[in-house]
Length: 153
Image (cartoon, rainbow, N blue to C red; front, side, top):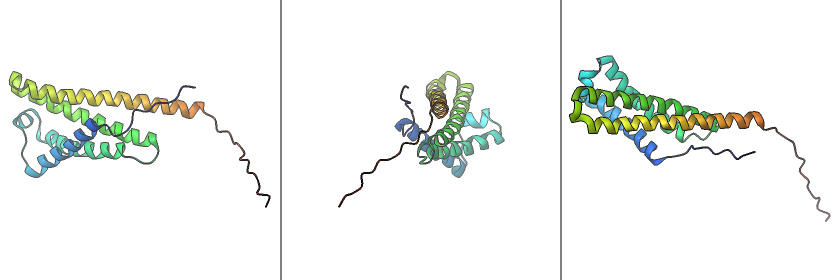
């Protein structure tokens, strides 16, 4: 049987982006200031969802990455958070590109790349979860008696 390799852990880029999502979401809520591309492209309810969603995705992602319990649970939490994070990144990228056009190409492309990287991470997590599930169904538990040599003194 081949060894199972899990691509989980504390990837520095992922951790940094999740922390940035929390800071950005909290900053948007506390300052009540939004980029023009967001105010023009998104209805108010969607803007609020985007702001709160950044915070939720960031916190949940960090919880999933640092999860000390069952590996599959941590990966599942991380997966849900990264799906949200990728979606909210794509929303902002599209808003920037739709409102600013070519002048926002750099910002829109960079944020869009974050969304693509998020979805790539989702693919990795799903692959890892499938490997874990396969190991759980193909392995059997065997009891092995422990031989202890008695002290003859």
